Length: 188
Image (cartoon, rainbow, N blue to C red):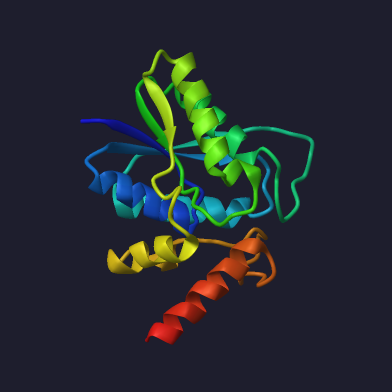
């Protein structure tokens, strides 16, 4: 059986990624990385619920940094998360997987980034570890449809970049979720 370390953030994309990798026959484990993000409390609570639902072990890594991270793009975030997951979990073989999908404007959500980082990770580990984003060529709507088609409990997820009990409705994650919900209502 192949191994997969899932970068679990608590959002819909990482929930779908973990489920997808399990369904592909991977032995999955997850890592959640606390780097001081604004939504840490709600993200961690969602991660713990998702890990319990999927019955996968979760490692929580905490990095101390004097910088406070605001809502919005954090340049290099996915580079940091992939590297931290590999380094912090001593992951020796398989894939480190994330819910990166197409349609996001951030460089570290692009196919170019994904391929470059995966090649670098593979070179560093003599081909034993690669980075893998199963939804790299899917858009957000396709990921959301995957969740609905597989009856995934989206209520366990948290997709706001702010640490508010009620999503802010203004960040990129909230705007994506609003679009998805309106598409779902149009189909219903």
